[in-house]
Length: 242
Image (cartoon, rainbow, N blue to C red):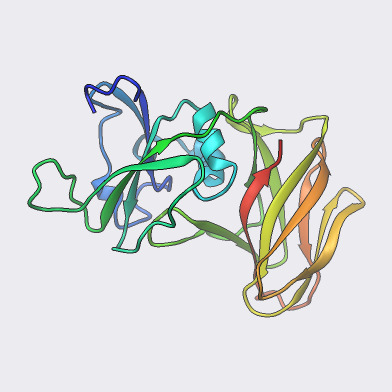
């Protein structure tokens, strides 16, 4: 890696709060590896949590272009077990994986370490869609590459400017696509901006992709209208379309 001049910045996954997973102690502790800049949770401030939440799922269509916009060249993924990554991943190229205690060039962790090169073009408008207030603790799979966000009553989606790292309210009309599923049973669901309903239907036990047109300047609210407060609606595959 020291000789690879095309690699300048590495992102280390999962992008969780330190100590929240069994691999946290295996994180690189320096902020530079072979003079390559390193971005991970070991040095992350709480103000970055919203941005990290939006980038935790590398299978989301918006993640690879967003990482490219942030200047990330390579992603190192710590997995908790032997489960295979869902390859190929659009916007990434698998360049190495290692899990050998005998190989002197291997970085051994309790699980598996995958190395992916970011091949996607940078995000055009530097905006991504992320889960905001109202979502419960993240559901993330054992490879730490796929994430789901659940809520039981009402939750909001936010738009983040990658250059600022903060929530923004762009004036233009935007299109977004998300996947929804109900964890327990079919549930009425609506998506609103102020008093306008931008989508209305039902979250079922089968995943469905929905596309919405949104006004960037108004909050995006998902409302589950059944009376059972324990039933969970889960969203994934967030994508703010170009």
